[in-house]
Amino acid sequence: MKKEESKVIAQKLQKIPNDTLALKHCRAGGTGSTLFGKQFRTVTAGKGCMEAYETFPGIEVSFNVFLASEVKFQHDASDSVLEIYYCRSGRVGWNMQGGTAVYLGAGDVTAHSMACCANSAMMFPLGYSEGISISVDLKQLSSICPKVLKNAGVEANLLRDRFCSGKPSAIPSCSDLEHIFAPLFSAPVSVRISLLKLKVLEIIQAKFRRL
Image (cartoon, rainbow, N blue to C red; front, side, top):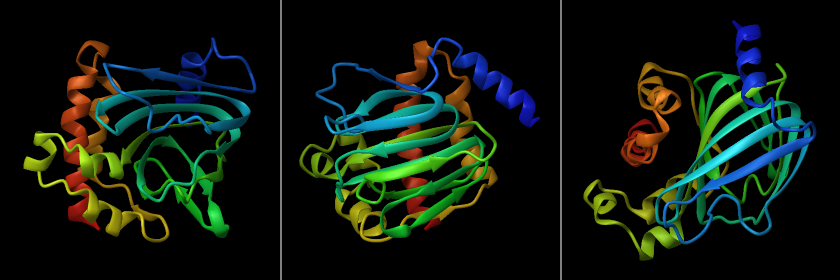
């Protein structure tokens, strides 16, 4: 199974040069990038691709594929931006600020502020991994919160207090998470944005229930 996963990822990245992490921002009338800010830098021992979609103002979802042993990240250290990361396949050892480390297997999720991962490194013991990251600018969300998010009970202050005031939190693989995330990887591009908006609501609400 692991060999097949690696082959599929290698095929997805066949056009990406070695030692390159391709960053793609698929805008849909958005005002800017939460995930790929001006200070976003990477160093890749291998190759990969991160493809980000803006779902709501200040909320982006990135599909991440890596065929590498390690990727180092540098970006602004913001304790007001929440990142939720889901590991679909492979394994990830994520070394963050202050000696903190998070270990993810297939199906696991972590949540933390982008201050935690401002200068960090993702290690891939199996040589590959695929996942999804959701970045939420809580400052923007508190000032311009779409009605659909308000109606769903999404409150920026509660998210900040729960997930951005300490070390990363984690949820182990379970059927509920699989049910939420799995459809995103098979959805046609034509309906991806619409599905992502629905899933962002479901994911944030699931985080409140689980932690």
